[in-house]
Image 1 (tube, rainbow, N blue to C red):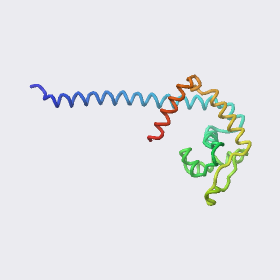
Image 2: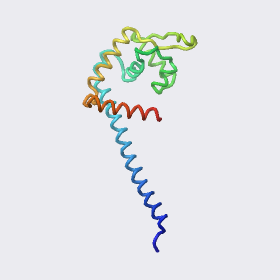
Image 3: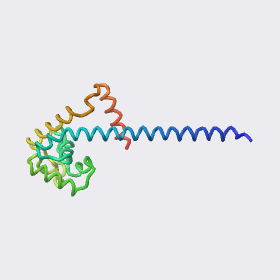
Image 4: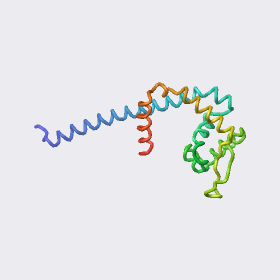
Length: 161
């Protein structure tokens, strides 16, 4: 006996959705793998510059998220930007402070909170590391238009999360 048309359509839709989901999963896995590979290659290329400044990838990431064009971030903001807990941030901050790259300051908006302020040396080291990262990332192979498109897509993904 033949299946009723509604069941046939439902089966066809389910098969199509499963195939689409499988294709989406493969595409998502590929995008994640490519993003990870780009970050790892960029970080690897930073090795000599990190060694020159006696930093690790983790301390570089902490410097990276302190934008010198913005007000100094609070410790709370730093934990959010680095996706780490307060004890880990304290460890990283101590390493940066010991190298004269940051100073702890009082947040002028909330005197109970602490902020991380780049020192002049910290600004110079950060600028050097960002320059090395930008010069050596595989993303440098993309055109300006491709980079704009990629940035828009990645920004949309981050905002939807």
